[in-house]
Amino acid sequence: MNFFKIPFVLLIIVVLSSCADNPSHLILAPELNLPTVIKYHNKHAQFNVTDLRTARHIIQVLHQGDAAELITSQQTLSDIIKQVLTKEFENQGLNFDEDIVNQAVKQTVNNKIDIIIDKALISVKQDTLFYEVKSNISLRIKVKNNQQTLTKTFNSSNNNTGSLTADVAVLERNFNQQLSNTLINLLIDDEVTQFIK
Image (cartoon, rainbow, N blue to C red; front, side):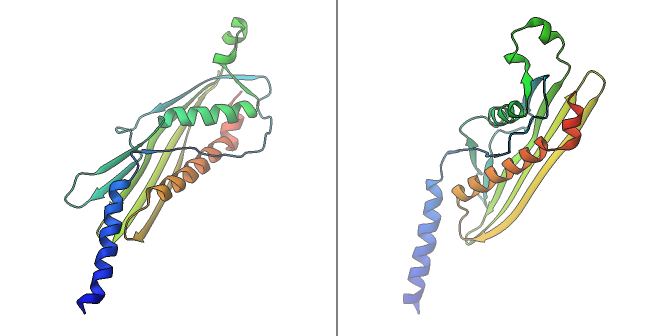
């Protein structure tokens, strides 16, 4: 009887020891793959991304009785989102003030776009033989034109469970997809598009 338990115990030891090999950083690389459609012909804006999260890690792995394991992204989340959205907005015809040399044109910029990161977290509750994952993203966009201000929130959440140990590479892949979908929803939102004058 004990002979049959040995492979099972060895499997658990191997799986748990692999936890120690988790990477210290995630690679966040959202892919949007949106078709190029000019929505903002001859429109200009100021653009900024602000991270209001109290902590900068993306993954927290909670082990009962132990300190949480925290994993951050290699590049700041605000920089990643700014790069991706700048490229997509420019593909849609929007010009940003840092690219405008002509001071007279700069003075006529009447759109200010702010993206605020309120949540971006994968929380893993890791037990001996199973895990539970909760992943939440919440982004706000604030668009000011010369008449009024629009504020809109884009939320995404995923929950799942699995056996043994959560794989950080899978968490990274799923989070990239979740972030991509959230950014796409923001970019194709009709209300946001119409508000940029």
